Image: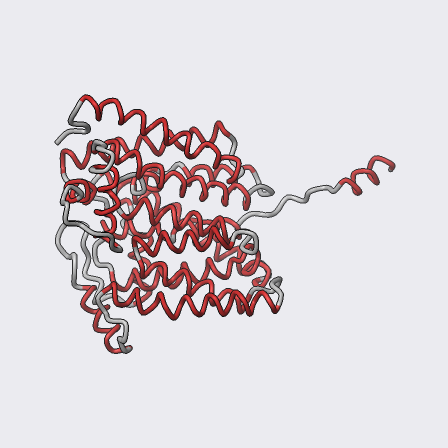
Amino acid sequence: MQLFDSALQAITTPLIFLMGILVVFPLFKYFSISKKRGLALFFWHAFFSFVYALYVLNFGGDALHYYRASFNYEITPAFGTQGIVFFTSLFSVGLNLSLLGVFWVFHVFGVIGLLAFDGALTEVTANKSRRIRQLATLIIFLPSVSFWSSAIGKDSLSFMAMGLALWAALKLNRRVVLMVIAILIMLFVRPHMAGMMVIGLAGSMVFQRKTSIIQRVVFGVAALAATAVLVPFGLNYAGVGEDASSEDIASYIEGRQGENLKGGSSLDIASMNLPMKLFTYLFRPLPFEANSIFALLASVDNIILLFLFFAGIRATLKKKLPAQFTTHNRMFLWIYCFVAWFILASTTANLGIAMRQKWMFAPMLIFLLISLIGKERKTMTVANTDIVNKI
């Protein structure tokens, strides 16, 4: 197999790339990103998509599996892995796109999530110091952020769903439809994560201070109804069973802890205590634990995450918690992040999987932490300016 297998695919592949630019170009304004920065992010993300395609051609991977499986004409619409195979077939079989052409399609999904993430960080750091804004830019251009979300598979779509949910949370009253779209996209690829999003929404309605009672009731009832549907569905999808008891869930977690223990990036997390599981999932490997170029790059990300985590804790102790936790509907973000972190850390034994899947919530946690650190610059209003001028 090659990046493209025919003369027609050699023509359509660059066309798909150009169409991707046309798709994301209107989103630069929507996410309040300059055209120059938006195009830079697009080409940066596309570079890693191309690298990823070359990697799977030489070493194999899930992306190659999805592409090959998509030529099975017996596949049907579904959720999760089977759904991705069916979705891929719409492009590989339906449009006769090459491997690289389908990579370019999924790259567009990933870059939409990246643009949403960048827009959220740009907004929350607008009145902070130059160093904080530079840190936000550094995070956006981290290789791991773009690499894992640039390939055929669940990660690009789940990353897009996470980014759209983050952007919607900034002005949830105006972006309810966008939040619903984000949840539906996550439901398609990872139903259990969609359930966690809905749980976060339901919990946030209780603590949102600026939301009227009527809005709390309406959104709260809708979120609770969705939770009642999605949580059992997510449990059933995960293999636990929709009528699972607490003992069934505990047994499932214990079983998951023993899976995926082959390879150099695996760890036996079953014997770890909860704090160590959480630390291992989000912050490891560290530089001295890296045994490959991918692990080394991931360790750089983890050092930055560690810095933000401790800086955020330090800043939290100095600030008023209610305001910090409820602005921008941050309670939804906090609940979703910690629920996802706890469940994924409790059920994942392989660091290679953790390096990919933590980006379903890590950008939200980064947003929350970076919003806490640094001081807000005071902006002078027009009225104040007139008074100063008169003086």
